[in-house]
Length: 387
Image (cartoon, rainbow, N blue to C red; front, top):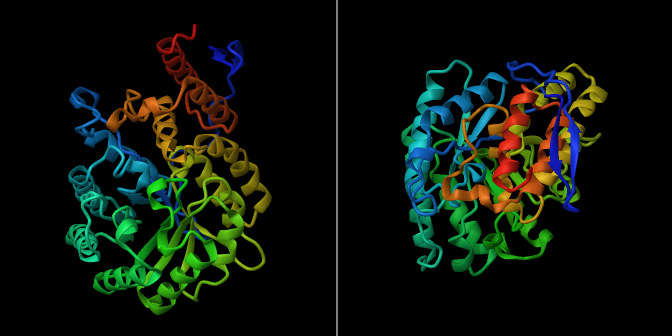
């Protein structure tokens, strides 16, 4: 199969020629120049998705196998984060089991490393009445992660937004949580483009006011903070904040639009990475980091820059549905046998979106077996009435 018929936005179709198989290795050593976490997706179990909108069902074997794929490429794993459909199909009981399973798997896997999201998604935001309600929810999840030996990523809380009355409330909640954690934590600033319920997080809709609140928190607790992941899809804002971080606290870019330039950095510094896009582009990204470690910045950009167009399409508004593209590409690349998601979320994007992701992934050299990817894409087109 040298080509595939793909739909166009005008209702026509095109014969799209397939590129060569991916040139990137399936294993790699961890790079020595950037700390990179891949926020990993979960694989649903379609045979147990009897009520997919209400009850999550996870294929644990396939989910763990994908973590081994990421570890084998030198990535750390950011577990039970937004990419895993946390709070958007994956409920806290399943997230807790995911954390337990993956931490146990990591302990038995030489070189495996991860950090785990602790949030408040077991607490209905409409049921939260006080900061203490939010604190109890956070503390339950932190206790679970630490019980199993995990490192904490303090996720943004939907429940905190409606009960926090000022920046001081955010400082009080986070200060208490950071003080209680056994080790260093990673903070997480997730913009409203990823989750509209988080608009005005940190007590203001003004970026600089919010940034100053976060920087106050970081300066007061720098010894207990590894870094902060910023997901605002604005390179300028991230760079501005990066330059103001105290020594010893790093910036983890969560900018899936501008990660190549932010990770490459400039004369005043660079960002590390904690990204959902690393899930589908892991082999290419690992090859790019090897070039960067060797001092070959041009080679780094030659590999990673073409993936940015894919990421921008994958994370386009409504951005919270980007997980559909992540799972879609995992299916095309043979990491799972089906294109189903917990919560039935695969229906949140249309066939034209998926067709564009196919083209862009192929052009980025991401398909290990292009013919397998093409056959699966043809099936999806047929299901959508595209001959």
